[in-house]
Image (cartoon, rainbow over all chains, first blue to last red; front, side, top):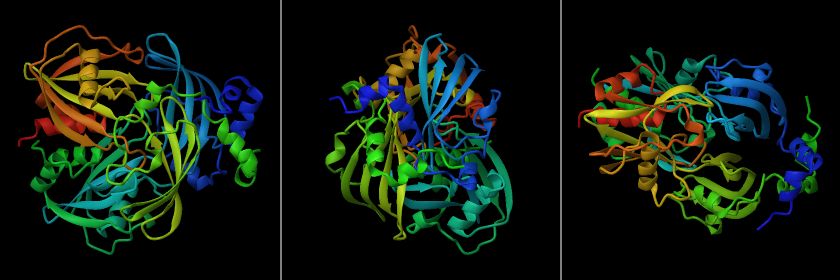
Length: 240
Length: 240
């Protein structure tokens, strides 16, 4: 089945560029744009002139070597305040030409917070995946000074706990083939209880206190279905 | 700075629907479309008529309850053979109206393969994230009968090892806020060596044999920067 516009798209460059111009839902505010720029998405390659993001769909002419990959051209194809989709024109490691579609979203944080020797765990219905247990966490926002600030803010919003001693536990890429976004991992102890302040999507959020053994069991039996939460639970529970 | 087409997009529905028609790069083949349909992305909610995906950007009028969320309308906004972006019109758990942008991509697999008591590990330059160690794995493809077949295929392609005894280790959501895609985890032993057959993006792929202790150290020092690989390494290394 051929859609009405498919041939047009492939052959009529005038129509194509008109479509590209109207593809943005609206202009992002500076604060919204900043949400996507909290980390360095390409830590191992020099960033060319488009380091400061242009938030309208458009084209950047670049030639860049990334290990065995080469990037010739980057085009923003679709943008909303929550995500931006790019299509890069590339040469693959085996020398073949190709395209690479990828998505820019904000970095994330997860926290292993110990209270009286028990881990704080969030139970919540996720719009896309159903009920799930996760460690407290969420997006690094435009207003967060750094990812530690984001982790402290998310823990306080979701559980009420604040203060304490914080230890960085590294960062992981949740989907390295789709997005350069990272999940920054933290552990925290010596926390002070307070009032939670859940966001509008978190009205059903519940906080559980699990022993480390129970948390590891919850990873093994699938209740903790979030990849980075599972990695962090196992990392803090495993003997050194 | 206002882009030329931004106001048009928001106000001119005729232009908007024309843009929607030309937004698909091309018609996906049946096999390509199937790549996105290997799992059930919404396991806890009934799927309405759009369960068989329409691969052209379009609109579906649905009303569905998902735990404390409500979905009124789903619209495909951008599609390539690698990903599809949707924007759903929703009611948030606190009762406020809103939009939810999300991405459909194929499910993935990762394998903890033990050979002579050592874990097979892949070192590879990723286009978006730089050099990284991961467990063998990749996308569930259209031709894969199920995710176990995908895991066996990816292990053979990347390392040459095949056969053996396989154990499911559950599944995790790598980015539950962005995509319903899952990473299916497996362990395997008693494997038979053979010739690898890397894909075009994997010309620089190298296979390492790590003891479980070394693999756990590699998670802790950040060499294994892939969230689901880290979770699976720690799961197979942790005492029961």
